[in-house]
Length: 246
Image 1 (cartoon, one colour):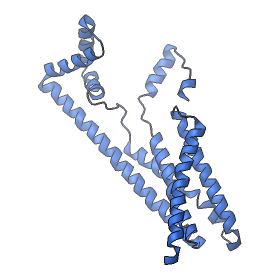
Image 2: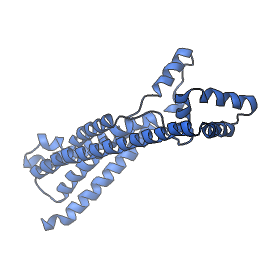
Image 3: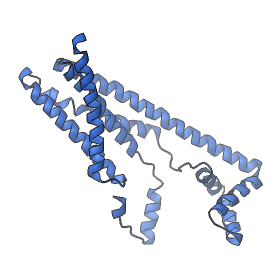
Image 4: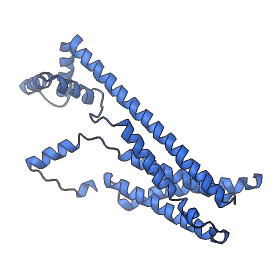
């Protein structure tokens, strides 16, 4: 947890930490992909089990879900991340033009931003002078202070790949028992293994997520486990209620 981390405050260590903060994080893409892959595939398996259909149908629907839904989620993440980057570039170009068109007005904006931070008198004017003397720093400051945008630009390709791989890996977990236990007399064992392995996957994903959170690892794991089992329970119930229609 963050509260347990003790930083090295040497000049070199500080520089390394500051450099690391400039690297974009793709954690959310892996987490979303992993949880969604496990949840949706487990829900499909649960629905088929509830409807008392064959293992072959479990494998067919599960495989189709992993490929199609995984690709769809990755494509959506790619499009969304690309749109964020395009918006960032548009706003940056706008601020760059504003400096050309009305530099005095943009200087006043910087002055008011730092006045709100508590700068006064000569300190305020010196801060304004330093920032506005470097055009990149000037625009960067406007991006973060005026629009609240992070300076790390995330790769839409890396975001999509991370989502798809996590979806694929975690989505295969509920199907694995039915790949190795296809005999009719092993179906109950396959069901138990499916629930156990998928539940463990949910808990592990939640526990790993807690590394970047103030929530304890076990609480985050239980929360993610509850979400996954809840989705599976709904799917099982629907499959059970509708099995008479098939």
